[in-house]
Image (cartoon, rainbow, N blue to C red; front, side, top):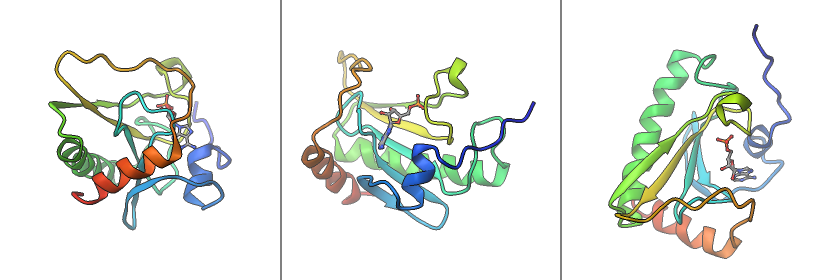
Length: 140
Ligand code: AMP
């Protein structure tokens, strides 16, 4: 069964400029911005501008652009955060852990022997997110 795209989801509203985000990168097809409840400093989300719910239903051409942009952001986040590694998460449907029904890749900087923070539900300080975004933008 095909589930319709919900154009009121948070990321659709960010794309329309109805809600703010701390932008890291944008081109004709892609937006990258700081995760508001980061699991590590520098946690960035990469989304296509084209509406798509999941990895299952995204158009292959859009997916190609999305994964290439995810690589670009992963490189920049690794440099900017001086990270030892990068974890990329991508969840599909609520059963798969997806909360926002607009496909996105999580790019999370990792450090040797440092666990990811849990899902605290706590929003990060906006000034800190802005400062981290500037660091990433400088190398993207
Ligand atoms: P998931 O759908 O499980 O892959 O996770 C959605 C992610 O979006 C979570 O990591 C949230 O912290 C993040 N998030 C939710 N609302 C916003 C927002 N307004 N700006 C930035 N990130 C958000």
